Length: 100
Image (cartoon, rainbow, N blue to C red; front, side, top):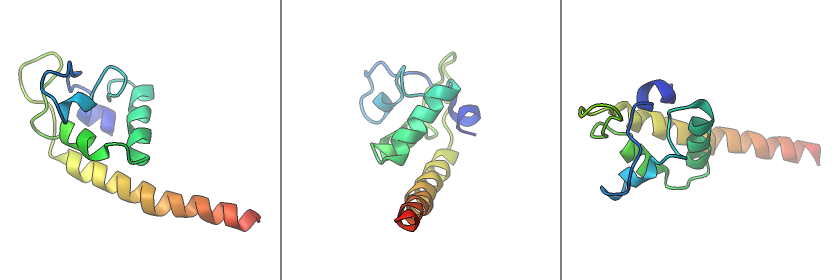
Protein backbone atom coordinates (compact mmCIF):
# COMPACT_ATOMS: atom_id res chain seq x y z
CA UNK A 1 0.00 0.00 0.00
CA UNK A 2 2.82 2.39 0.88
CA UNK A 3 4.55 1.88 -2.45
CA UNK A 4 1.38 2.71 -4.38
CA UNK A 5 0.49 5.78 -2.35
CA UNK A 6 3.93 7.23 -1.56
CA UNK A 7 6.11 5.80 -4.36
CA UNK A 8 6.26 8.97 -6.46
CA UNK A 9 7.44 11.29 -3.68
CA UNK A 10 10.69 12.96 -4.68
CA UNK A 11 13.92 12.07 -2.96
CA UNK A 12 15.16 14.88 -0.76
CA UNK A 13 18.31 16.85 -1.38
CA UNK A 14 18.09 18.35 2.14
CA UNK A 15 17.31 21.85 0.86
CA UNK A 16 13.84 21.95 2.43
CA UNK A 17 14.97 20.65 5.82
CA UNK A 18 12.82 18.61 8.19
CA UNK A 19 10.63 16.61 7.68
CA UNK A 20 11.35 16.29 3.95
CA UNK A 21 14.93 15.20 4.56
CA UNK A 22 13.56 11.85 5.82
CA UNK A 23 12.78 10.64 2.26
CA UNK A 24 16.25 9.94 0.87
CA UNK A 25 17.81 7.62 -1.70
CA UNK A 26 17.95 4.88 0.96
CA UNK A 27 14.64 5.61 2.72
CA UNK A 28 11.77 5.83 0.27
CA UNK A 29 8.81 3.88 -1.09
CA UNK A 30 10.06 3.51 -4.67
CA UNK A 31 11.02 -0.17 -4.43
CA UNK A 32 10.03 -3.05 -2.18
CA UNK A 33 13.33 -3.38 -0.23
CA UNK A 34 13.49 0.36 0.40
CA UNK A 35 9.83 0.42 1.49
CA UNK A 36 10.49 -2.42 3.94
CA UNK A 37 13.47 -0.48 5.28
CA UNK A 38 11.34 2.64 5.83
CA UNK A 39 8.63 0.62 7.56
CA UNK A 40 11.19 -1.16 9.76
CA UNK A 41 12.69 2.20 10.65
CA UNK A 42 9.21 3.48 11.51
CA UNK A 43 8.38 0.36 13.53
CA UNK A 44 11.44 0.85 15.70
CA UNK A 45 10.30 4.40 16.42
CA UNK A 46 13.10 6.24 14.64
CA UNK A 47 11.60 9.55 13.46
CA UNK A 48 8.39 7.89 12.28
CA UNK A 49 6.51 11.15 12.79
CA UNK A 50 8.89 12.99 10.46
CA UNK A 51 8.55 10.26 7.82
CA UNK A 52 4.78 10.57 8.17
CA UNK A 53 4.94 14.35 7.66
CA UNK A 54 7.25 13.92 4.67
CA UNK A 55 4.64 11.65 3.05
CA UNK A 56 1.73 13.98 3.81
CA UNK A 57 -0.21 15.97 1.24
CA UNK A 58 2.38 18.69 0.59
CA UNK A 59 5.19 16.37 -0.57
CA UNK A 60 6.73 17.04 -3.98
CA UNK A 61 6.55 14.53 -6.83
CA UNK A 62 9.64 13.05 -8.35
CA UNK A 63 8.92 13.69 -12.02
CA UNK A 64 6.44 16.57 -11.98
CA UNK A 65 5.84 19.81 -10.16
CA UNK A 66 2.54 18.70 -8.65
CA UNK A 67 2.12 17.45 -5.10
CA UNK A 68 2.29 13.69 -4.52
CA UNK A 69 1.71 13.06 -0.85
CA UNK A 70 -1.59 12.12 0.68
CA UNK A 71 -3.51 12.87 3.84
CA UNK A 72 -3.81 9.09 4.00
CA UNK A 73 -0.24 9.18 5.39
CA UNK A 74 -1.52 10.13 8.83
CA UNK A 75 -3.91 7.17 9.02
CA UNK A 76 -1.36 4.83 7.41
CA UNK A 77 1.54 5.57 9.75
CA UNK A 78 -0.44 5.92 12.97
CA UNK A 79 -2.23 2.62 12.38
CA UNK A 80 1.07 0.97 11.41
CA UNK A 81 2.80 2.20 14.58
CA UNK A 82 -0.18 1.16 16.69
CA UNK A 83 -0.16 -2.30 15.11
CA UNK A 84 3.60 -2.77 15.52
CA UNK A 85 3.91 -1.30 18.99
CA UNK A 86 0.95 -2.85 20.69
CA UNK A 87 0.19 -6.07 18.84
CA UNK A 88 3.38 -7.45 17.35
CA UNK A 89 5.59 -6.48 20.26
CA UNK A 90 3.25 -8.14 22.75
CA UNK A 91 3.00 -11.22 20.54
CA UNK A 92 6.79 -11.46 20.39
CA UNK A 93 7.09 -11.15 24.17
CA UNK A 94 4.37 -13.79 24.65
CA UNK A 95 6.22 -16.28 22.44
CA UNK A 96 9.47 -15.69 24.31
CA UNK A 97 7.77 -16.06 27.70
CA UNK A 98 5.98 -19.23 26.57
CA UNK A 99 9.29 -20.88 25.68
CA UNK A 100 10.81 -20.29 29.12
